[in-house]
Length: 126
Image 1 (spheres, rainbow, N blue to C red):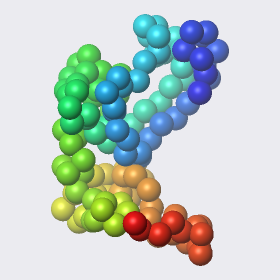
Image 2: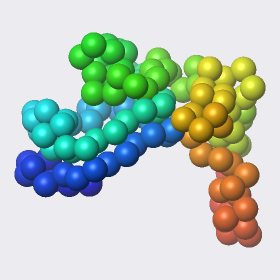
Image 3: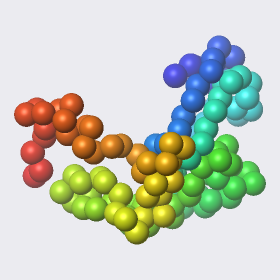
């Protein structure tokens, strides 16, 4: 990622991800996103709010947010993973983000592709 204190950003596409917004969110050092990242494209991401330091949808995907073409989830249970406790991050069929990615698949990682790529190096579930 470019340094937000210098205007050296280029074209970045950020789409179809599931990410935690975190306690402090994301920042460009007070500069407008289109200045730091001139060709920044974002769409179809799921931003999960911090459970303790709630930011609210208006500051992520709403009128004051940097990600108006993405989705907001108040917490990770609303994403509806199949079984996150066992590292199964597939989306359940009743997830609002099931088949909601830009290509019509699920938002987030394709677990079958990931597991195939990891092969025998897959981490064990604790």
